[in-house]
Amino acid sequence: MWKVYALLSALFAALTAILAKLGVKGVSGNIATAVRTLVVLFITWGIVAFGGEIRQLKDLSRNNIIFLILSGLATGLSWIFYFKALQTGEVSKVAPIDKLSVAFAIGLSFLILKEPIEPKTLIGGMLIVAGSIVIIL
Image (cartoon, rainbow, N blue to C red; front, side, top):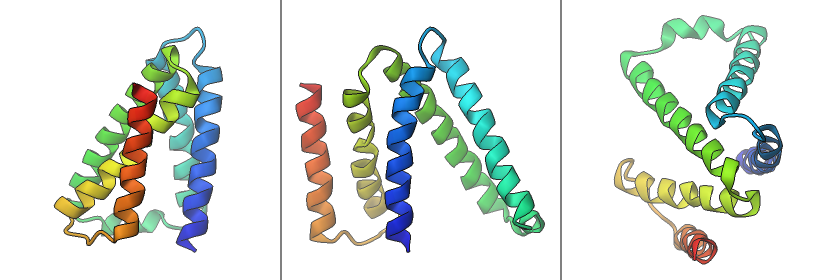
């Protein structure tokens, strides 16, 4: 099932890029990020509330909280830079370069999480890097 979720994530990420480019015209990337974040905030808390998961807040450990806060900071910075790139760049160039995050995640998962890297994953990551270099140059 994770593969279906990953493909849906990719589809919505593509829509995000197109819709964000249309939405950032004539406004600050920071304002656009703030509006987008507010929407995400309401959607996710709505899912938690209506799904009956709010009780799980008490189960969060100190480690959970620290790493989720750090992840939130990384997400916020990623979105801010993404919108700044979309303000002046073309979606067809910004979005693929942004997907270098996949190659970075592969490398960091190996270094930090000690996850094994299958040859096909390594090749896929290298192709993403190569594609990004072609677009940048």
